[in-house]
Image (cartoon, rainbow, N blue to C red; front, side, top):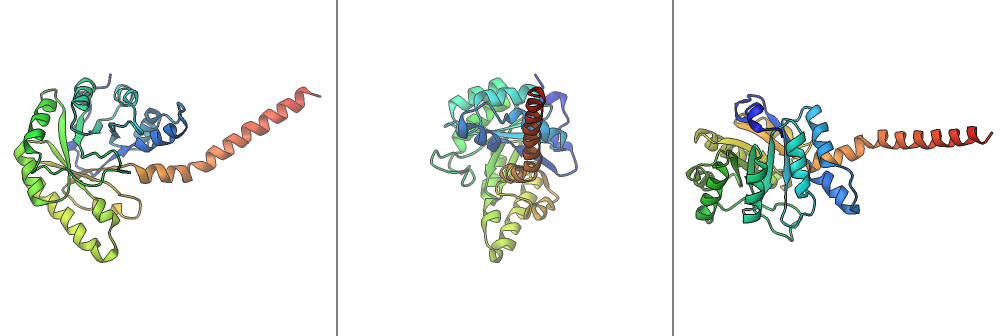
Length: 261
């Protein structure tokens, strides 16, 4: 099994990093209940393409990533794993067994399409404190997915977490009239967390048209991005897939006609 101790330390890497979320590769697979496409295969392609880490969200309802995906990627892809999960006893046991490089604790609602906002660290400090300690005792770095709010960042510092991931969803979804203020919130949040000695990551809703401004924030270490990458791959990688299928069909027909003569 690949161990994070054998890899570079992400927080010491100076350049902006990309954590590729492969959840929606699994979404496509689960839509038909097949064995393909394989998130582990996608994670390895991401590695070859320059990704610095792999993110998977093992949701309680198992709507996309499955338990075996987590173990498969952890054991076979030579990149640090960021395991996103809710703070449940079941997920804690899985994380302590898998031992990913990092666990990102996120709020989770079964009815939501995707994570709707950051954790309320202030209200959940006692619960989160116990959970953070239980993960860190197993050598796992702990990240909290939070809104870029000063009080939430300060509360995260009090819990002794290694990383905060700033929720960029409001920035990604707002209109042009709010974009500057939302960017300012993220930038100031990143500066504050960095000044407190916490590694700062960011993610949610980032895509090819809005990522550059966020990536320009010097305090950010890693951006975790998934849906937009998978969506683009379905388009830019589709030509090759269609071409290859047609060539197989033509080859089979030619072979069949040749055998029949």
